[in-house]
Image (cartoon, rainbow, N blue to C red; front, side, top):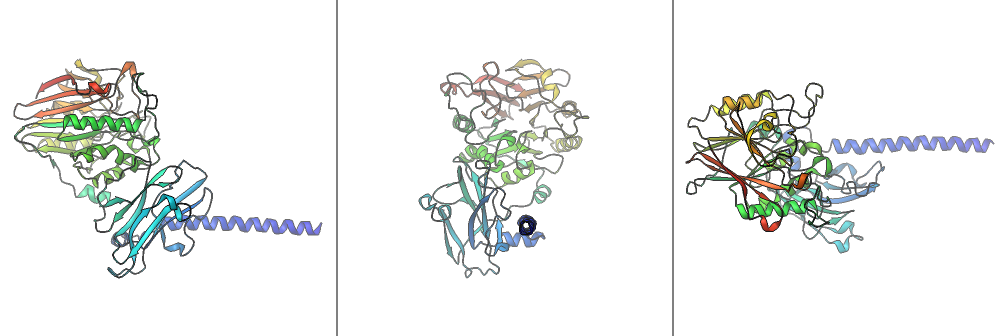
Length: 508
């Protein structure tokens, strides 16, 4: 009995020590992740601009307390999120990078090249090959997810050869030190100009805008939602179908500007918002067309807030939008002096105060004050219009409606009087997205403002109501004639994409 009691005592001690060790390693691992960057801004920039000397992928179990390289563990920085995401929930894997303690340019051996060889994956750390030398220029490594992942940011280049395969394809991408580090969110907001000058072709004397609303890009394996008509292929994949439609629109219209009016991604249905965001922008970047973005209520439901996404968009070639330094993210003016002024407002997302303002938040008073201040800076009365994502209540109170009205307007209950402000400022046209199967235009007789809905272009969100087919709206501004023309194109059937419908021209 004494022997059994003694064994039980040692077993209890062993379990206590095991729990203490587990918690210690868990706390240490988390602390190393949180403190891997210097605290001061200048030191952090210098650290992140130091070329890395090694890259490693470390795999561990879901409950492993210490998931990092063991040798010199304190010198390794985790540079990616879990590469397995939710595909193999019992596993985790991360990319780690190590920087030299002392770096001398042209002398210290650092990473010069990274490439993937899938045939060597089993015997050589996922097929990861690294070449070292004194001229290394790689400062960071991340992972993007899915076989349709694409890298758009300046200074970031996909690793050569092939994808990693960890439950699904992972695209490793590397940042070169020779490119400047992206500015902080605060710096971007504080140093932005008041306006964005949009290139205007004086010979053509018009500006054509392709409006893309509610693309709802998600992951490569997401099926088309509410697919219509029935003859559409049963294996319809949402992101691929959306991209095909957007690419066709760009070919047919050759717009001067693309304006994304919210819900580029389905944030609450994606594993990685960064991957989905760049997929949404990719066709426009491929065609080298200037673009601007405002955000919707679904964009920030993933792992990135709107200002984080705006920081990414800032790094993408072709972006001319701004963050703005008032309430929300994405308040700015696109203009050509004396020709036009296009105001872009953040209509925010779901409310944080359900009692005072149920369902959706609203445009804020400081945004309307900002709109007034911007309006007074134009002396020669250019063509003016405003874009945002969530419609106002007044959108569904219009007369002379042209287009589809198939769902109740999902508007805010606590709007501070945006329609009244537009009337007072004599801004004649406001455009929104959000309601996927509404794409009408109409005039509000009280406020004398024309309100237009875009309709949805994407297959990752709802649609198909009563035979509704995805579509896109195009705008053409003619300053010399003081007119705004708009028309739409349907996604299906493909042979009818050459046709336009609901062609309207407004005198402004």
